[in-house]
Image 1 (cartoon, rainbow, N blue to C red):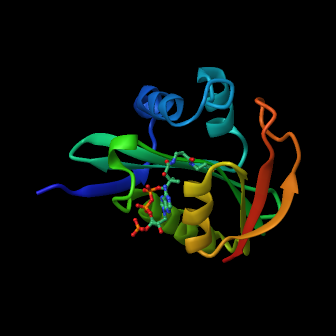
Image 2: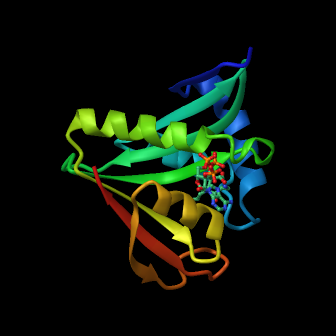
Image 3: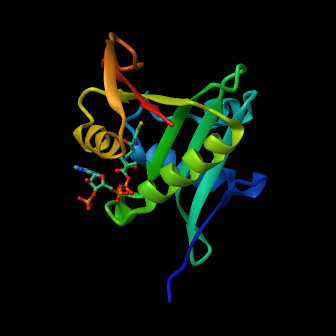
Length: 150
Ligand SMILES: CC(C)(COP(=O)(O)OP(=O)(O)OC[C@H]1O[C@@H](n2cnc3c(N)ncnc32)[C@H](O)[C@@H]1OP(=O)(O)O)[C@@H](O)C(=O)NCCC(=O)NCCS
């Protein structure tokens, strides 16, 4: 039987996470190894992964800000073959449990305005659009800032 394990990332997971990120976003928007390492190692950052039978299928990087009142989803990526199977929802839920334990009150993220699937996903999970960030991405695309009260 297939079992999903949600756990914190460890150093040996790095290559899998890089590969999933590269496959999930267009060139110029996906992180390279240095950027991924930078975001995972920033102060307040935590990475959780969803593993199915020993293979990482999805991951989420969150960053708790210094006041401990707010946090940001840095990225959430699910392997294309495993989308719409609930892994993104499971990771998001676990991240919210972790943040609630820390006393975080508001969770935010930026999403490409053309990424309808992700926008739908976040709306379904209670995030609302706050404003548009012009030219947010390296390819010139705008982003929506979305926020949820925890
Ligand atoms: C967005 C993403 C993280 C969603 O993860 P997921 O594991 O596929 O989502 P889930 O299976 O938990 O979906 C839960 C619900 O969200 C909504 N949803 C998810 N993907 C959707 C899509 N492509 N189109 C429309 N609604 C979608 C649906 O309501 C879905 O429920 P349903 O399948 O019963 O209809 C995933 O598609 C992904 O990794 N995309 C590429 C990377 C990306 O864009 N990340 C977000 C950047 S901030």
